[in-house]
Length: 102
Image (cartoon, rainbow, N blue to C red; front, side, top):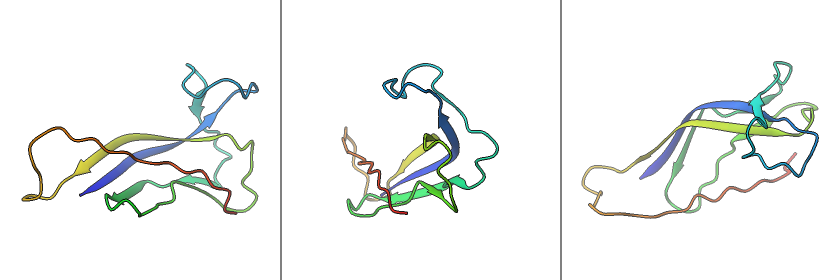
């Protein structure tokens, strides 16, 4: 099985008040066009093996800008191969980790 993420977009966390949560209406907006050195991967495939990691946002050069990036995922799908799927309700967890690996 795998999780596929596509139809992604770079967004900006647009507030001078760092106590405002991203879920607040109007805080996540379209990124400005000068952010050409910041990229959200357009197609991300995660096997459900529990150990695979994938880069979601990457930067090149001096890509600090304001450091308030956000990624928008519009299409997330779980694919289960034929013959493996079982009927029922299932739960799982996707763990997101933020690292400063420049």
